[in-house]
Image (cartoon, rainbow, N blue to C red):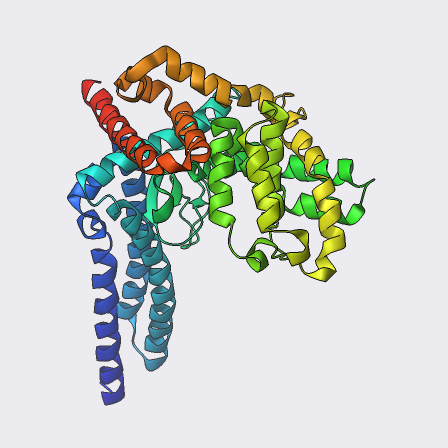
Length: 424
């Protein structure tokens, strides 16, 4: 046998063995995340993720077996060259599956302790409730949820049903990233589940068309801008409908950076200018709740971010967009939509249920049990987030006490969920 062929074959076999070992290893769930982290998941969520990752790895191994069969049959340098090219392509496929595996592994492993595991189970539950109340009446299934902690400033979601990095796997769960700094004010979870709901129902597209149609007479250019921002406006409106002013206050604290950051405008971006996005939240609160703490916070917002800090070239368009904020509020929350069965968002999820008056009445009527009873904690979890968030905005001097209250609440909710499942 030709010496060159022998050396090429040995090198190719070594590469094959390397990538086979790698593909076998990432298939083992205990190497993806710890047993304790897997155990901190809801059983059906963990099962969905395991099933999805196993299927992706099995497909990878099937592709490997095709290349290995070509290697066994190789009789010439040209045959081996074809196998070597197949290994290069397999390596690319492997890195995509590995990215998928490590994404879920990192997310699951964020449940590193019993306390954090309970908190993230509570967040899973909150996210599920926030979607179920919209999706179930419209006869859409609520996707499983995996909430995990991440670094950075902003939350995000990898939506259930998306095709993932390997090109074949469909995201089995709604994976919501909550930033570490925001875990004690987790209203962003509901903003992110709003993205999931909007994508499932076709709300983004319908709202974009509505903005373009209803705002065009005032300014065609601004109508297109609001249309481009429709997905983020929808998610902000969804967050407000579910947890009220708590969502607005938390948003303003996170995006309230330097004036250049607050007035930053990306012509191709989907996020509204932060200055306008917060004003939109204040407008929502005023439209549904009348006068309140949001009026004082809006005055402070406008003082800190006076319009003269905006780039001069942006100011004329900014003035038009700001003038349209009340109209955008009406369109997003009060306009009947086909995707909502002919009702508006506010008819489907009534913001009045999380008004300050409603929340304070709930607090009075339920008494001390509201924050301690497993029944109340599970039944009213979203309203409790809304209540704590409202008090956080109203009484910043009590922030430490409120953070402790929230932390204990999430611990009780996480433990209550585990207890309910065990009893079942």
